[in-house]
Image (cartoon, rainbow, N blue to C red; front, side, top):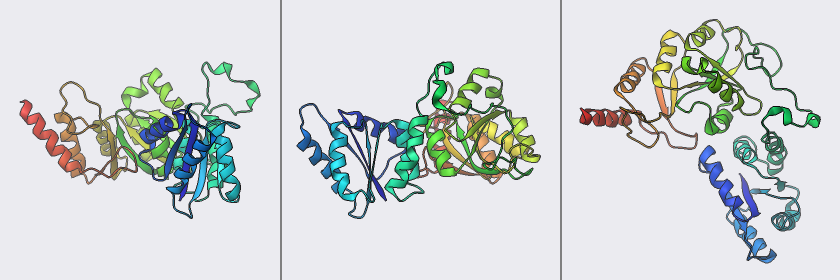
Length: 331
């Protein structure tokens, strides 16, 4: 496994490590090294060597550092020289770069391969609004229209009816950091489809969701009836690997009853509101929610209760029993 060392002036490395865990979950073999104002180069080198010692002897090391030419870079560079055939250094550390590095470790075993891959993610993470302030000389291709006909990676529209559902998730936040990075990466999705009547008729929310899609992945918002039609006669999304997002279990039930062939639902978050009980930190239910999940279970749908892929799955039956008991006590 590739060990990752985050190094920075001040507490930046520690802070971005925490931010990365919030999005991608707890990570093994990731160390944060901070260079404080009262420390010198020798202190910094000792911190880096201590961080490296926590990895296995045969682990390759990827340094993600805040600034080229600064003390963290200079000290890491001295250590890198003895391993430059395998280790790598990338500067300009930002959160998109770090999240991409975490995702890349799932499929790449080389520090240098990961380093070459994540540079683009770091650059693409720098965006600006209003968009017309973007420098014209960057050469970036214009983003595709939100309602443009989807294509596969080879530029061809997929065959009707051949869409692959790689993940279907219930998440009241819909498309946010954990979905845009962690779940998209681990599922291999190249299309994110938000299935919601409410969002489809809310132009602002629809626009924000489109803009939240990760680099290289297209996001779409469709009403439930339209998703049912796509599942039955897939003229646009055929050949795609689709990640479906539902805002609540009721929408998921309507889609499945209508013919969307989902055998499992990932349960991520359900926001608390008046009249709901909260049996754990991220899921809140009213009676309709509980009844809906029971209907889904009777239809043979399985539940995978996890915020991020690295979490252990919770038992949905136990969660629903607790929620029902809490609701009964309110009566």
